[in-house]
Structure formats: structure tokens, C-alpha cells
Amino acid sequence: MLGRRAVGWGREQLDLAALAAMESALAAVQPAVVINTAAFNYVDLAETRRQEALTGNFTGPAHLARLATVQGWTLVHFSTDYVYGGDGLERPRLESDPPAPVNFYGYSKLLGEEAILRTAPGALVARVAHLYGGASQSSGRVNLVQRFMAQARAGEAIRVTRGQTLNPTSVQDVVPAVLALLDGGAAGLFHLTGEGECTAGEFAAAVLRLAGGPVNVTELERDPRPALRPRYTVLENRRWAELGLPPLPAWQASLAAYVAQLTGRKPSGS
Picture 1 (cartoon, helix red, strand yellow):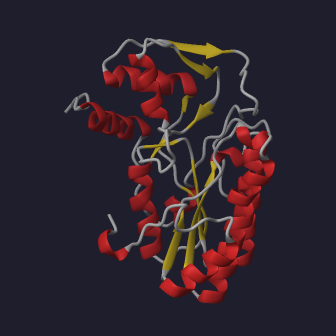
Picture 2 (tube, one colour):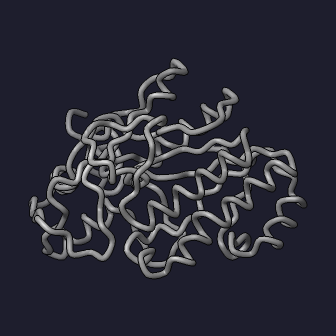
Picture 3 (tube, rainbow, N blue to C red):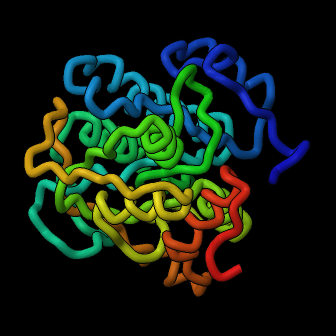
């Protein structure tokens, strides 16, 4: 979408843990905008590999914020709906609502966004949720939709936590939204998520139906994974709406379009 206006660096070229190398590399390029998509997003591993989670989600991003202020470029950073959940509320969260993470991953992401907003007032921090649709740069990793489809092809039941409520979001919706905010000179904290909400079970069932396979979803009363999952983390794109921008697409429409890309099946109604 950015074409030749952007240069993409992977971890091999720019590691958030290598602060001095990162500083000199960015000074040499003299960018106008730096979009940070790096993170330690292994939710369960973050419970035991806490220093790695802090480096990827707090220390590195905080250093980027300092560089943005010194070198004069704009930082774009992505945070998560997992900064919420510990308050017990079951209503969409606004950007102004106090965070309350329930696991170390969410806590480390919260530290990162707070450091950026404190250090670089011109930065743009976008909280996103349950992303799918992008190409992972990590070996062997696939997004949630791809994993559900692979499990279904293997005849496995999809196992999700009962009652976990969220708003799935397509990367293909987030990218143009971020560019629109940059073009408008927006700064600060924004929620950028698909419109509407669903449970994890409803999302998994929708993926399987769209892929044309059997819907085999098991909802677990107790989640056996090491990290606690929040029950309700739906985000409302309040600041986005206040700018007069059109709503992001409904999660159902974006999911249908993405599954159609993967399978070659036309979205229903097309």
C-alpha cells in the first residue's frame, strides 16, 4: 500500500533489543515516520519469559519514542485490547478508560504504550485486537484464521474459552486506518478494531462456515493455558469516530473477504 515510500526491516536488520544499532540505523535513514510492528506477542510464554516480553513490548518501544523525539520523526506503535479485562466490566472500552490487564503480556504492552505517550507526544499508538490477515515474519507462525482452518482440515476440534468476548480485526482494515490518521496529523491513543463483537466460539464457527467445512468447535469452561485470558475486551473506536471518519468494516464482512482470499470461495451474497 505504501509502495516505494516505505522500507521494511525485519528483526535481522533491526532488533529492538539492540538499542545502539537501532539508533544508528534510524539516524542514517532519517525517516519521516517509523511504524513499529515488532512485539513479543506470545501471550502464554510471556508469563515465564518476562524479560523478553519487557524488552519487546516496553524497553525497545520506549527507546524508539526517545529517538522519535530526538531525531524528529513520528512513531506509530501498536498495542492491544489485552490491556483490559481485569476491571470486570462488560461494555466496550474507550481510550479514556483506565487499563486493567490480567496477564503479563497485557501488562508489558501497557508499559510500552504509556512510555511512548509520555515520551513522544506526537506518536500514534493504535490498540488493535485479535488481528488476522497479515503475513507473519516469524517462522512457523500463522494467524488465528489460518490456524483454525488448518485444524479443521486435520479433523481437529477448535478449542476456545467459553464466553471470551472480543472484536476480531483484519490487518487489511488497520493499515488504511493508520495511514488516514497519519495523513490527518493525528496523534495519541486510538482504538482501531473491527465493528461489532462476538465470542471466541462464534468467531471460530464463522471461520469454519466461511471455509466450507464442518463446524466443530468446543468451548471450554476453564482455559488450561498458562496465561489468564480476559473475558471481555471489546474496544470502541471512539476517538476515530470523533474525527468524523467512517466506521471500520464489520468484523463479519472483513472475515468473509479474508477467508475468500485464502480459499478462492466467493463471500456469501457476492
